[in-house]
Length: 248
Ligand code: SF4
Ligand code: F3S
Ligand code: FES
Image (cartoon, rainbow, N blue to C red; front, side, top):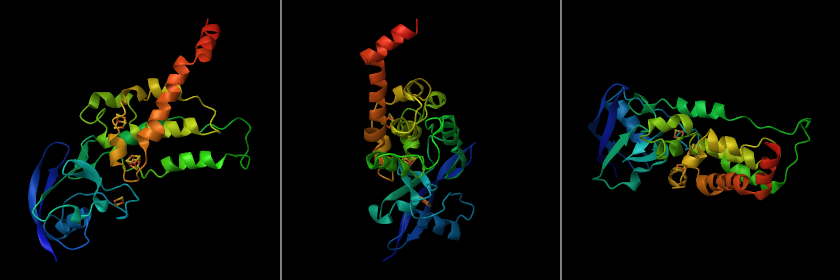
């Protein structure tokens, strides 16, 4: 049975905006994105919302529903009561372009700052061999759909514009960890992770892992192991002695 739901949607641009109230029909089996599409079709044809696959795989429809970072296409209306007011706002960590659409170029900038996969010199295509256990470790990280919900939720940059320059965010610290753990990657990424990409800012609150729609254990499987590697480098007596001897 259908019903009329109360929606509160943020409307505006980079200069100014406000929450506007709408009453809109909801039918069985629908998700929040369906309701926004119905709003576009019946009341607000100029509502800007980004989406692509409607299957939780393209990472385009990220927004905040009742203040929580979520994919619009994967949030079922049945998770709310019929009399609940559902508030939809753009991701808070990134600048708004219009309505629910943000400029997420911060993430592309951070992606470009990470040195790419560095195989041993002279290794030819076809000679890349690694154990299944190593393949599986990085496969978890490769499930990322680049929705940037983890970036949006991390308190280090949410409401802290000043930290953006020196913090890559969980998605890209995870990328560094993936490369660092890759058995064929010869680059040592520990110091750079700490000094240039802000690994030290992360105080393992795990909020990033909680919002990840792919269920990637960002904190437990990428960030904490990366922190351990950095600590090993700092406190390993052999590394310490090596630094003493060779940096003189
Ligand atoms: Fe989205 Fe998860 Fe990838 Fe972060 S790690 S961008 S939350 S899929
Ligand atoms: Fe931020 Fe995730 Fe660390 S939310 S503080 S990157 S555990
Ligand atoms: Fe592709 Fe939601 S529309 S993830």
